Length: 294
Length: 205
Image 1 (cartoon, rainbow over the protein chains, first blue to last red):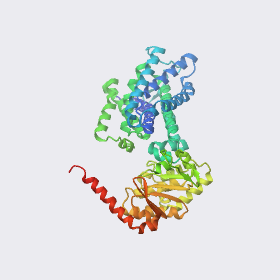
Image 2 (cartoon, helix red, strand yellow; image 1 turned 45 degrees about the horizontal axis):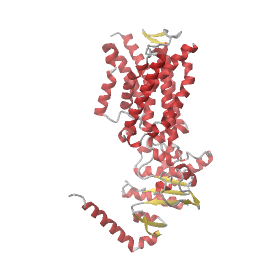
Image 3 (tube, chains in turn brown, cyan; image 1 turned 90 degrees about the vertical axis):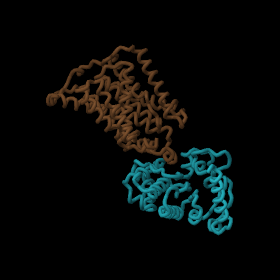
């Protein structure tokens, strides 16, 4: 195996890991805030990718500009979905029922996309689609760097929002002890809705980043949800830093394994890591307390 | 009962008044505004946040920065442990220290009444003693403390007024000192103990 190839895989893995990290952060937010397993997260990801593609083909503008529309739209959709649908589930069976409910939402989105845009594979053509940088023999596509930058900025913004703002404090308090948060005058239902909206906003950003350099089709979301679910369990359910670290590590591992094993088999690293985690450290590697309580 | 008083549950009958104002059936936020602060049973600190963040969240509904600062200084002097461990993660503190963080957090809104639900639960006798010292200090600082506690002797020793509930009905009520001296109290302890052991022997052996 040549040095430049190894370096290229390593860099591509890191870049991919950034996107995984952002999406997994959203997924872990849903679970943290209200113990919801959000199967439709990756369906919203693909929906956002389609919206970015549609936006670019219709207007000819850069897909990144579609974020101005999709991020607020997805935030509002997430808030509405939590308040109108998920908050109606019975608390005792919430986690199980949320799987069914969000599975249905995923199917509706997939069906809707197929109906509107057909099952044809779509790809955005950009002026800089084929541009790449060369670094010690490794070739890195510019679109991948842009996608990573987008993910990294969003993740940082999410982190600062949660750590530094009054809303973030209230959201974290709601995650850690809902009753106590309520007694301090925090409107935990509204906060949970906003938390859900934030989660979907990560799907909007992730979808746009994905649309930059991937071929998309309606059923693509099934390829994403498995790895993402594995990442949040390995990172420790509810822990955003845990999800981010697990995403980077697994992204790099997947990318490196693609060299000897090919793309299909390299995916298995997520499930192998998941099995190993469940066997030896079921609470995940970070945070963890939430998973124990669950 | 305390959950009704803090607005977490709605009562089927009866009324709750604070300073003569009827606040029955208010939600948690309105109860907080009416001056009721509730410290839950068991541990309820936000474990993965620092003591500072926990206490800061106590003032979530307070918008006046100067008032928050003043309150922060007040709880720091009332509970020295809180000041000492200010930047520690609350989950890393001992049970008794966590309880004091919870007390401090509940006092940030300058409540009229503090509702304490079994503050000694799960604590060893020595820590219980410390926690009760803090309860007395809150009382001495001029707060009305409504304490629900199984450790009746200790509770009465720190209280002004006492009230014994049996199956939801007021059994004995009066000045705490009188209750301590009341022969019926001793009887009730014994009676209570007898029914519990009878209850356990009912099960299959």
